[in-house]
Image (cartoon, rainbow, N blue to C red):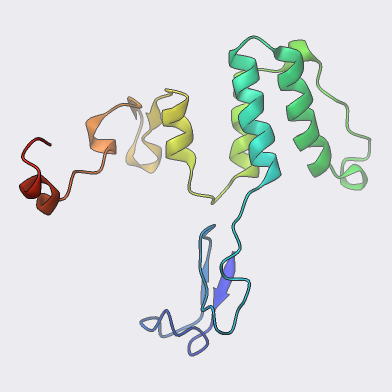
Length: 154
């Protein structure tokens, strides 16, 4: 999450008032903010990705270990009033991993790609009940007209 203040960022000129954005890949002006081009990789994202892969391959113990790493790091013992209790291998489900990823990766913008990679249906969200298949053609970007004109084989 970052804050835009008018007049401070020459790359954005159309916004007349202070704005707050959530964007993992924001690139600020390089002249003044040297941290604008830092590649971002979140370790919890890697643990959760490996957890779902391990679970899908039948390695429930490995999935539980990865999920416990992420959950234990985010656990607040003072707020909860008790220490974190690790999940056993038999208690880990795909739904638990999906829920943890939903919480951990909020606003990262990769939910669609995550669902497609796991071949899960894409929920309609606020468009109403239901879902569309992960391989629905409407989820693919069309090839640009210029590319199709230059290469008739596309």
